[in-house]
Image (tube, rainbow, N blue to C red; front, side, top):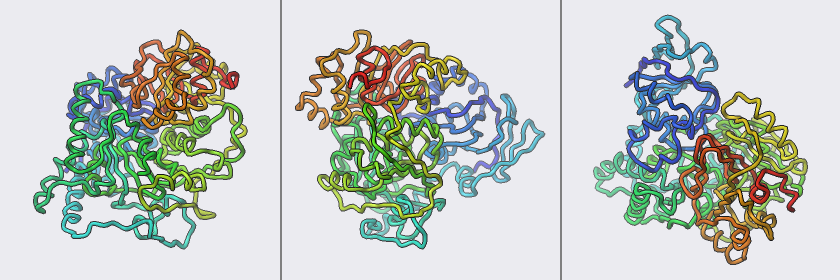
Length: 633
């Protein structure tokens, strides 16, 4: 038990420090040992961090809003802990990072007033009294939920999970509540999320309710997180099975999936061995492990009908929210949450989020697409504007968006801090899902007059192509104001809003879980047909799944890209997180259809990444600079 933490403030960070800042993506698959990540902490952001922390045994970080935003990588927590970080004091944290820290016992304190803290201050933190003593003199209080404080004091929550698994194994029938047959009535109007959660619990639940556990329907892992998560689960729980005279087994072999997608074909021995381990585990457990090249996790499960309306889904990637396009609650989680859910089928310590409603009106004009909708919304709300919220999409213009378009919007909800996104169920979704659904499902709509935290109305007809400038998805401008925004960037003193001196590009990327689907290539093909990629641009093109690749090949669409001079690769996530298949060097300026443009996200920390729709990306690849794509349509 740890009630008192004493240490020195060794780092003070600004708002929106993301997990790519904390630990570079390329390191994630190189080891399952936590100590490995110590030397790479803040490698792209603060090269003095490791040396400063090595001088002290107990280090404390102070930061602004949204510390730890970005991906679900738990290695960010390991990198901090292995550098002796004992506590973080910040204005706010995104949900996934908070959960990862809670699971691992890295103490997070939320305080609005961080100006009172200075570098080199020595702090004495008491978790029971919820009090901080600064330099042995000044005392300041902080608020912390009692259960959260208790978990931090205990160093995590593994003991409670072990007890729950023991209870589950003693039951002859482990069947959960069938949400399809459940219909929990409520005296007050409900959002979609509140209805799905209530039906899974078997009782009425509302935003703000704190749940000890929530049953899930689908759990999937990529090869970045699977090796450590599977190892942790086997290590933490195999003895529980042995005591009950059983062998370790997953909670439902038909509903757990392993999907190597981030670094395939493999780029290192460590990655290859991780995938080998996944395949052996899958064979032993009788679960499905996809083949390298089958596609990106957020695409193949939808294609194969494993994602159906009303499900609660966990995936070891922050862009699991993509599946919200199918009227599901889909949450990205870290290594520990996934390792807990693997044998039990539950997400633990869950607070029902509040919901922000987005109503879509009008019709998208020429050259504008779903990527422009979500970039506009992120630009409007900011990268933490929907923090810990669910964003619910509907409205009269929903019927104008295809399923491919909806997945793009849902995919990037996490880039404005949202816990997840969810779409209403309509005729388009039902037609799509009825062709492929592997399970019975239940569609959900919100009640009239339900309690939204905020309602946002977007007139699609008013939008134009959007571009996000480096190094944040929230640095958004319409193409008509590119030059003005570039001049604005040159005056910026914010590291996350980099100065851009030219709109010329060296690289372009069309693909990723955001925009690597069939329709994305169809619209981009209209731009590239009978044209050539600019000789100064490396244009990497990656369909998001084998099925998409084969369909594009059959229809002759890939031929258009090949003839134009693009480099076409098999399905993977490589360029998006800077691992392989198009890593950029210093001085590069890339325009990408992916979802993040953090410092060092796609290679060198000196490179600058712009985000845009497939059509805008393709137009830039042809022009050699970022332009209004409508000139080619």
